[in-house]
Image 1 (cartoon, helix red, strand yellow):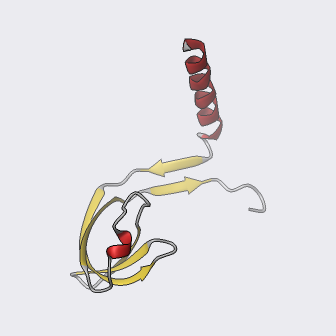
Image 2 (cartoon, rainbow, N blue to C red):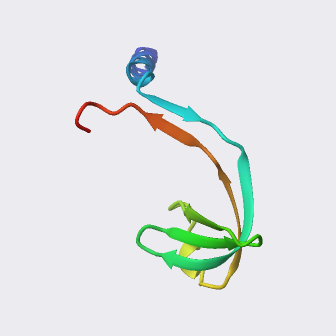
Length: 94
């Protein structure tokens, strides 16, 4: 059992090392937004929100949030998310 766990850990490390130079994530701060729902896209689970200062934010709601179908245009919601940036090196022609 230990051999399988170690082998899996070595495989995961080698795969991570192989791709480590190709992607980079810059972790941002947690952002809390209280806003009014302006538009809903059910298939992509996307909300367009209008904040109190008049600016807009677009959020994709994770599948784990089961009450998404209950959200209606005009509702006021509070959302917390991390503002991250992910860079990926593209291959030629991509």
